[in-house]
Image (cartoon, rainbow, N blue to C red):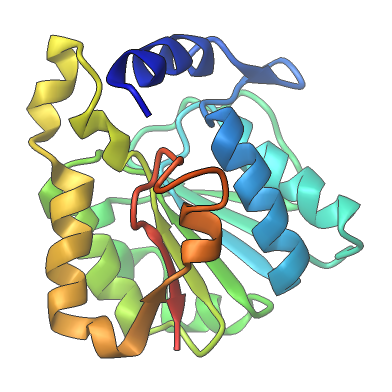
Length: 207
């Protein structure tokens, strides 16, 4: 897809709201997450990076829409910017670099399986790697971890250079170490064209 198309899509994505809350998901990824939620019958969405909470609210509604009345969303961020409450969502304060302090074994044990983990924190290599490494010890067969926004490497704005290809480098290095345990779900990544997603090669299923 031409870079100019991604640039224009990004402008629209950053203006998108869901039920009045900013919701920064691309139209491709909204559709892809719906496919995954339907196929996986997700029990818990664990989101690293909350921002204003639009994605957490959308995930909670989509779990309900897919018939999962007991589905949970756990959303972690280092800064609290959410101004609403929802009984289906736990908004937790925590750092992507030390998730063991907030996502304890006891908490994870209470979360319904299968898991869909969404790594949407800083888009920096350090945090991407920390999140992947943490969840590697906690994911089971059929769980997913999605590393978001590798597309920043293709966006033209100077503000995107500071990410230094963080998500993509993090995924590539993680798969170099643990690729035998994961598969890239190409049915999702390539559904609308090769890596026509904000998360190139970032839809990972635990084998």
